[in-house]
Image 1 (tube, rainbow, N blue to C red):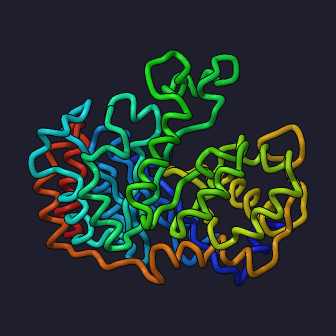
Image 2: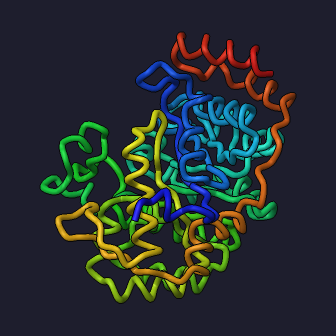
Length: 361
């Protein structure tokens, strides 16, 4: 069945999207560029996750927050930015994580996106995500119950030269040469973080890269009541799901209130690619259809109940983040821009950001 028809009348929020480029292939500005996606599927909302630490540039925070100015029904998870790499934790001045968190909340961000635990990013930040440097920030976030969407670790294949693709190597995603953390070390950082801050309102993206050992997730769910995961691909995740069909059907049913939908889609989007992603993820969760996805073997749908589907595709995100996005405080956004605009690395981008701020604020 056509995915657009399948989703008619359904409540959907894509909880994991990115703005990575200023223009699409037709020269269309990002401000107008992804409205089609929300409208095509009749989505109740989208969540833009900024990743300034990945690009060593604050621009993504500006882009996502300006998008929210233009489209107030949009959720935004902004990120912490850093002025130097590796991060000198003893000399960050008035850019410490707690200060930045307070600034972003004053602006009207809906949560915090952390990519500091992706090994390719950790390679140059060089600060463990459980480091005391972050504790004042985590303490405040935990107290406020603010949502964190965290990417920590990566697929195990990225540590194996025989399994990682050439494209992934070009992106810096091969970790088997001893230049960064092991998969176990990165998972251990998250375990230590949870021990220190057990009530964090936390979603670990991409199934926390534990689809091959989901029993670990079950033990984490038992310990930490505010911990969720999302099911943004990773094709390796869905291959693992398929190999243990009965187990994961039971897992998704048992933990339907701990699992969130997201695509990890990026702007500019390839429309067919985005439709394909939503189609495969939704059909896996909500139908018994078999689709061609991420493997030579057909991906067989686990056909969850409508109540479970509603939780995964809508209600769990709302429970974590809120029924409605927070309003933008334009005065606070202007102040944030003045403080951090020197961290825009590219001259042309600086001029574009400056122009948009003058036009929109």
